[in-house]
Image 1: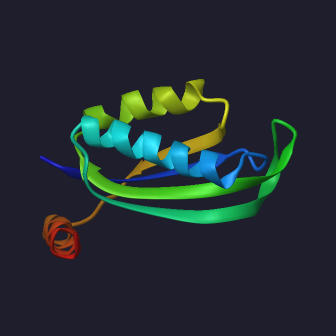
Image 2: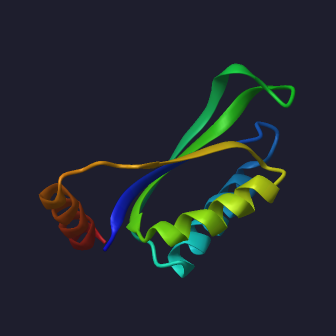
Image 3: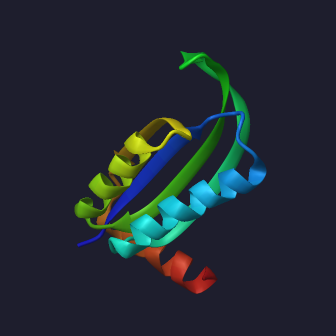
Length: 112
């Protein structure tokens, strides 16, 4: 059974646009390899952080919404923890009613 997840991660503000795209592709591929589907990625750009993290006042926010098995999360978060580019990450399981999950899957399948 697929569950809907949202992962938000913050990249260091001093990396280039190409490195941002590489990081996004890296985590997208990791999730796809683990069986995640219906992926929607939004690069929210550079924003001011609420508080300083590792001497950074800004960060590049990236949000990923996807469906997949719970086992897909651990390998991706491990890669993020070991990455020097990611300064924070958070994965949330979305509590959507079952019919909403099916609608999301159908909508993404149609638009893909």
